[in-house]
Image (cartoon, rainbow, N blue to C red; front, side, top):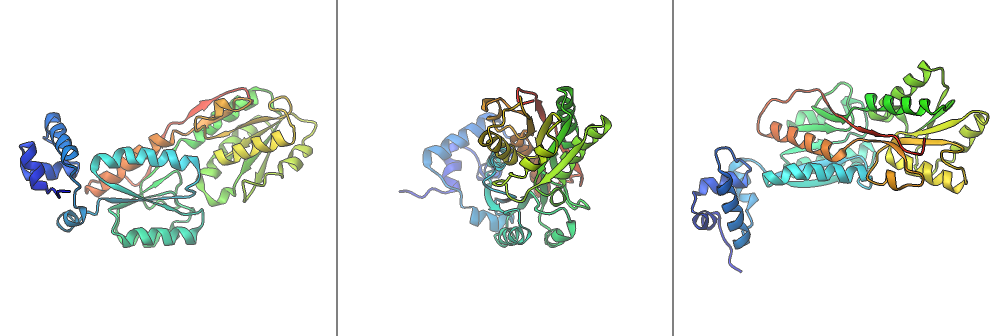
Length: 329
């Protein structure tokens, strides 16, 4: 098989080598759509594969983006990465995905491995809220954008859902259904800012209406059996369960079905993350859809700006969520 060079692509497309180089690096300014299409067609026709190792020596870019997620098996991560790749592929960048495992030590190893591969930047869903654990990453000087979770204090730009506003909307919808008791099902809230914000938003609405709210924290989503004691303690009241993420929402629905507890006749159920399955459940679930794919696009755009040397505000950007009120309430 013939090995074509960038010069071959330029000659076949009838453009300069510099124009092809700009195309490969996603620099489309002052480049017509017709030229972009011509270069793309020639690359496909020749089967040309850019030598990014060689170009990295000249441009000082590896064209590799590190993405560290808390749990790679979480469907949220799948949609998030899809959104990120929708941006990075237009820049001819590759994504290196690492699983932080919701464990600070595992996450640190993953980050250092990415740094050793000279990634151009890192998108991070941090496993802990304390910024001191990420000073080494700040000191490395690599562009970083946080996703989904904040740090205290905030060292890097961050893109999240509007957790407080959407959580309050869901809580208000639940209370309008006449529920007299709320059980919040969550992983430990002090380990991630997003969990605390969702719990606090729900609690604020409940306390404003003098509705008791109980926090049930679990380490393992496979064991939500503590719901039994929480429901028994409020046996005389109409209760609703609020799950702070999609994994726990599914776990709660599974447990209720196993216990033959009818939703919403005996207990209401609502929570975070839709993933296109909430309306297919029986009954259809009342959820907050965070739009993780849109969040992925927003965080990737900010990282690309940082890599390009542009200034990005070190603050929080909120992507509006959608609140779907369905029959589980």
